[in-house]
Amino acid sequence: MRHTLFRSLVLASSALVCLAASAQDQPIAFTGARIIPIGAPEIDRGTLVVHHGKIVAIGADIAIPAGATSVDLGGKAIMPGLVDTHSHIGGAAGADSSSPIQPEVRVADSLSPFDAGMRRALAGGITTVNVMPGSGHLLSGQTIYLKLRSRPGEARTIESLFINAGDPDARTPAGGLKMANGTNSIGGAPFPGTRAKSAALVRERFIKAREYADTQARVLESAKPEDAPARDLGNEALGEALRGERIVQHHTHRADDIMTVLRLQKEFGFRVVLHHVSEAWKVADEIALAQRESGGKVLGCSVILVDSPGGKLEASGLSLETCAVLERAGVTVCIHTDDWITDSRLFLRSAGLAVRGGMSREGALAALTHNGAVMLDLGDRVGSLAPGKDADFIVLSGDPLSVRSRVEQTWVEGRKVFDLSDPGDRLWAEGGYGAGQPQRPYLCCVDGAGVGSGE
Image 1 (cartoon, one colour):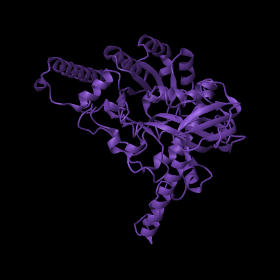
Image 2 (image 1 turned 90 degrees about the vertical axis):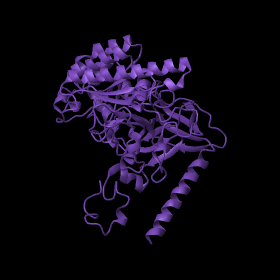
Image 3 (image 1 turned 180 degrees about the horizontal axis):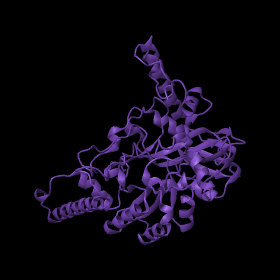
Image 4 (image 1 turned 180 degrees about the vertical axis):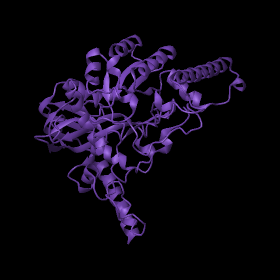
């Protein structure tokens, strides 16, 4: 019976894949909703047309293509799929205790597409996510940018969720480089014991990576491959950062730690996003200056907003006004979950917290979408609704800043991958018995399998 049930589930999953694929063969027109494009005026009772995974038209008076499926969304709101620039879903784990700097580690090698976090993220309207290793190292590895394009059971490998999956001409997988400073990375040897030693180790390693790259370049010029140094995966990853091909996604909290990151960025020229930045409100003008003087290499701040006390001592200066202060200073701002710190299902609420702290409505919504996309080098594909961009969007029951609004549908590349009206999807959105443990029916004889909610 169990084998029959499993086979039925597989067949049903395959049927859904085929049905979704065939739906891409004809346009879909979503009509009547309030459309929030981001970066353009909101549209009352607008129309959004998608086809072959892309947005083909958006506006108030759009002609619906012949043969299109029309979906009436009167009373609803449509906005871009949310972009989470800092998350740990998927079972993320990176560097180990052997050294404080491990750029060769790839977090993608630790991720499972079956992880419950993927489903929670879609229930929260997140369509693009930067999955990071932890912050207990000065450099804990390479991050991975994912598109959550699959319904439960469809994705068999994490590769299928890579941003450029199936594109032979793209540099895959797309991702950044996770770095950190402050108290997290301070410890006993071989870890640094002070903030100054932390910065010294980072400088030393970037210098070695630059020397490695210079040697490689000289070998290419001399056409003597036998003189090339032994391949070094860590130096290769750092070289990508030095060339601007891989963005440094940098955990930092205190104002003095933020300034250390900016000092290192100026010295080595890498592109960087400042993450968390609990005390950024103290040095907002300095961050804005660095953003201007770096020629855009300081991409901005990815902020986490929490409205309850607790956490680490170096985050004690956290303020709900940080996003507003940065916005007024001219700093580009996005917001992230750091899931589980903020549950992915509650990501929209972060925009409301930012507005409560004084940020503009437009800025707060862009901080969940377009600005995050830019900080992942994906602004040309996701983060706003415009013709030619990926058809990644969410359908809301009401205004995105209302605490009463729910994510009703999540669409990725023109496919509906979450639907609140589906009992299975609702379980992921609301939790309860069985959520997060799809294998529970098969664990009847395991001690404790029937205990608890499964969340």
